[in-house]
Amino acid sequence: MTPLSDPSLLLAELDPDRPWDLRLLTLDHPHLPRLRRNEIELWKQCAEKHAGALLGVEVRIRHVGSMPLGEFLRRGLSPKEREDLRRWEFPLEDYPRAMESLSRALREGRDPPDPQGLLPLPQDHPALHLGPSSKPQENPLWEEAARFHLHTLARFLETRLPGGMPLIEDPLWVGARTWERLASKQEGIDLILTPLPLLTTGFPVSLPESLRGGVNAGLVAAHSGPLQGVVVFSSYPFLGRDEVMEGIRGSPPADPVEIMALCLIHELGHLLRRWGHAWDHPAGCPMKPSLDPDYGSWAQRVREHGPCRLPHPSMRTFQ
Ligand SMILES: [Zn+2]
Ligand SMILES: [Zn+2]
Image (cartoon, rainbow, N blue to C red; front, top):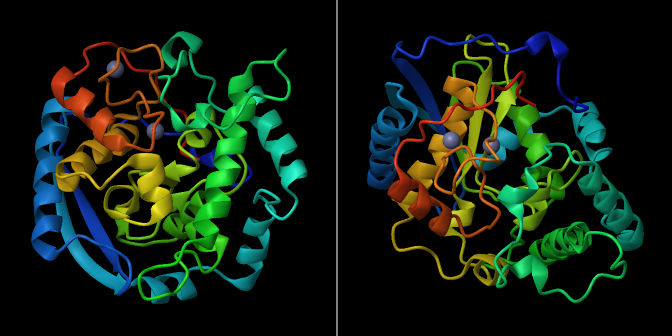
């Protein structure tokens, strides 16, 4: 169980034959890259089409509103909640302690992947290029992943936007745990599109998150509404053009909207089918998470593979 989850939110099964109407809120920020209005329309349409083909569910996404990001964040959390959330952050100011606790958390594994599905990583994976492990008797992947993760977060914190303002004003505002909390409090919203990076900046953590340098495309937050969850989706991994993002992902993809739609399908698989991560499924299964912040190659495999007919593990809760 995670520190923020509520055991009363055990997931009920949903009828896969029922059409779903998802209400989308978009958040805007003048200095962050974002989708234009027509691209948001296209993203919704692509996701609706892929949800039918890949998940077997009929979905309609309705854009019900937009809000300035700053206002959403300011209103979203009380000072007490902010203080609580900071307790789960990595101690980034104390690198050796952060390394040790993060590496231990990864070895213990929140979401233990099937090693066959995970290893070996491609030889050009960025996490494998940070030097040899200091403890070769252990699986070096945990150490490398933790180092890569902390190194990437530290570099994101130093990153400035073209206008000179920091990309991350406060690590709290990009933390995945923060967004779980923010989303859980929304009324009348099933899907939030944010232009900020959505980073794993604290515990709990899983190995894929660390291998992606803490970068996430989306998450499902527990909610007390009928779907029991709200999807938070970040456009930053697809549209971000800063040096760190380009370093770990490469140039921005030519077709970000289509890739974003396929990545949203992974989150809708969690939300609407209650499917968990399918580590032992072949590459191209939408429920097998990307181990790479370059979501373009993951999306390409999903597109080529088509629907995955294997049974998917069930989720018990959204965290
Ligand atoms: Zn997932
Ligand atoms: Zn599958």
